[in-house]
Length: 440
Picture: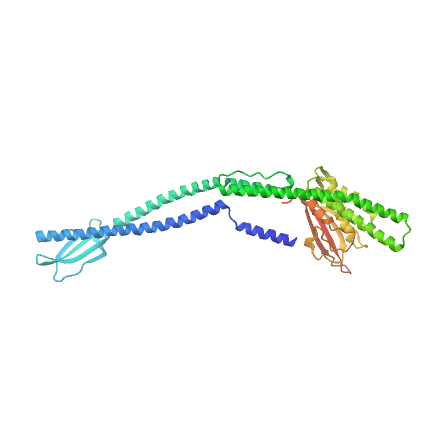
């Protein structure tokens, strides 16, 4: 039981880390698009900035050449505020291209300019020519271009994202429908698996293989079920004949005491085999959903009837404490089997001096018997053929039938061992509990 719980918890943790296919694909598209959007915006910014700087540079060289032609032709040039300046110098300087801050009277503030300066000898006179171009407007234009680009791309991205998601949802719709049908498919239903057809080749091939596989599994299951039922039913007659012949031999022949013990042991083995066969048939009938006559049953009344029957078969005292009325909807024969197996298990393994307790409270029933020590493997107590007792009359199927009936009606079985702290001798209690409340 502990291993099953651990596996269940591990599956919950693993599933919490999983993401739906469409979400995963959409997140991949989203993250990739955001990275591409940022990279393209940065590249556009620097590329446009380089183009504007080159244009300003070409304009400065063009203006400088224009001034040189005017000086060569006119012999003088009038400065244009801080934009164009010409002055005579005594020594030559190389061309310099740089950014500088200059007060602009027209704007009455300091502005950023791109400046080109250099000397040129014209008609025997050395002039220093300085030309400037304001680059503030170029930065505004650059920002406007990049923001416009990003806005357009972002809008296109949002539209593509939702269109892509909608398209993917439509493409994957047959897959998700088939997944739900596969989850609801049951071998016991007898119905074949019908999957939604898809235009996608891979989905079509997957559907075909799943249908072939489930059909084969269903056929194998039905064959195995039929084989089990046939064998179980066919064994009843030979076992009854064998037991009858042994009774005849014991009654008709003069046999020794040792032979009598051998025949008695053989009869006990045949009785145990018949009991095992009946329980296997019962398990098969539960698996085959053959118990459909549900009715409202009082669990207390069922226990009262079974306790009266046990008084004739066993000397163990059985005490029923019904603190609450418990009514359930189930087949009456299965209710009898459920309660009988719980009591039978408690009576078999109870110490002789202590009573077996049956407590009905809070929509739960507890069957309690005393015991010297806890089970070695309490997590396996409801598994088929598991038994820790060495009793020859035990088949190892009683509690597994209890578990099967509980699963059939969504009841919850449990087992715990309680130690009596105040007891003079080391002794405890085996508590088998059935919670009749629906599973949450």
